[in-house]
Image (cartoon, rainbow, N blue to C red):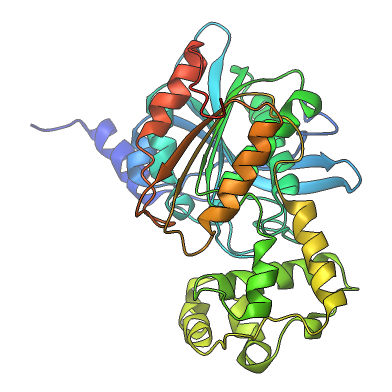
Length: 382
């Protein structure tokens, strides 16, 4: 079968891509979710571009109480064609750990660091999608690594930004994320009711969520951090020190961790080999706090970043493995018990033998679909 010259040119342009162009937004808005800038995304994978999707990279404002207004980058998408009555329903996707440097953002990658397939799937199914980079990734700022509260605000305001760029987007939305993003989605479910009452959150799905990581401190003291938790601790500490210059990193690093600190901080592909080598050299107690006072400071910081903090405003799905080497299953168990005591409706899927990256998320799409359909969520708290 042959195709016409116009179609051939269209396919060739889709393969080639082009330079991003600024988008003209009639009303940039002010305050939470308002747009600083927006531009086209012509270099997404060809499968995504040919599937029928409107896309924009954005910089938007997010206002965290007690912190103030911050500028955050991200990307937003809608299906092509006419929106249904009430506008496109929304998935706000919170990505997992990518690093703490500005270059390590999904919007800086043509494949969205692997999330482009998710965008294609959800838009094909009739959803608009918002993907926050989180503050400090993709745009100047200090990334608040594993700070669920800060990330929760970013997740919510990405929906507001999406609706400004694409006015045919509705108010009904769900949050979805894994690992770092799982904690962010969980936090968004707590914050949404009071922070964004104009939006209608139907539910939040969290896979292997970094809900409460305070246990890292005692494991660092005992020298029992796993080989996955050591480098995670380094990013936590470096991120905290950038936000709070009063934090003395030398209270928390010694041995090879101190020697290789710069290499451990990297997150771009060109630094991956050096980081991997540095990780292999870490000692059992390289992140042990040097004093009880230093340990208390770190516990307080991690506690402030943890969820739950308050009752959720919509049902939550939490799926996690009992063999997770990044996030101890006992930590997630405790967070869930606390959330249940607050009266949350939580579908709990504790998977035997699963780790961090192999948690089975097959139930997520059905669970989210049922929330949009108004089906009551299974509550494993009761």
